[in-house]
Length: 96
Image: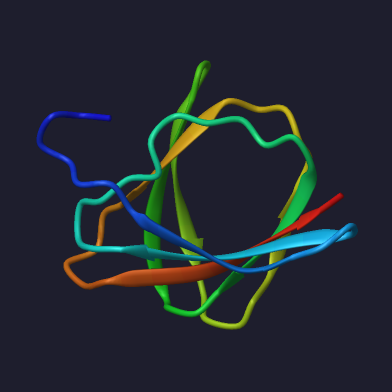
């Protein structure tokens, strides 16, 4: 985590033998910190805006639209940063 960035706030809403559902709330400039998913996952944005995605090999901006889901496979080490001047929220569903 960058010294100037605050951590995003994860709240696990549900965990069972099939899924982990986590709501992520990002203040402006907040980040997830570097992590790697153990499971494939789906992200459901609750806010529209841009997030900066950092991986070990690239950095790019992702435009997310509230209610428009996308999926990712497990294994890529990454960090997600809120570049908006407003809070950004998404729900992440990890598939066990």
